[in-house]
Length: 265
Image (cartoon, rainbow, N blue to C red; front, side, top):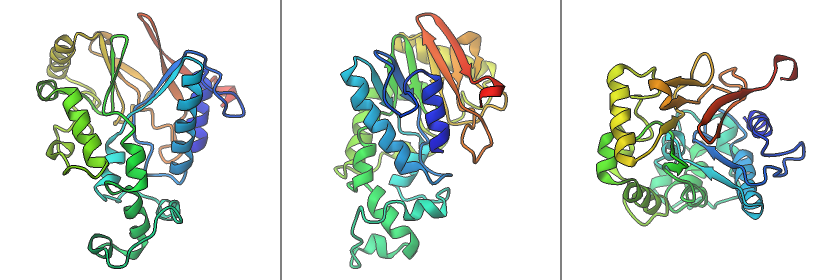
């Protein structure tokens, strides 16, 4: 939802009405799931990638994280793609009729598959994104980092996903499943006491203060759990979910959600 993305960036003080970076040294983190369930995917990616360059020139930064929907598209799982999404990347790639992988797909899926499969032009763009981002004591991740991931090493996991998206290595087996860093709902699905204990173990191992996750829509907006060590920020802002833009602001030790007043949105 391009309009929702713009509204969130304006709410954060990152862009003006012309979509130009005005955030100065502000750091923006987008926690994934740009793809699927809407027709504005390419435009949103273009916006974030342009803003990344503009922000860097001003001493700021735009960090983009791959969620499960980005990686689903890379392994050609298109169950949540809209009809418009199948046509959005026409002209970007040529579909080789002798390509056995593409030939095995429905004709309507082949252009998107050629764009997003590892080594394809959109997969190369996704390879520029992160699996997790750490800033000033906060870990930003699409679904949540579990103890097993700290044992594997976040840098090592990042490198494996990057190599796969570049078409240089096979798909990491841990990308899918209930323990995946982009699929698990240990933290985002209203965490239990045990989930908070797991969170504490992970944060203590990494020497961090809090974790910020997306992935699961929070019915009442951005919500804090586990004594403020966990922030769940997926508010279903896209029109598909009927939500409204909301962003998490972190200034030193102060953490709060920002929303537009009802009469302005």
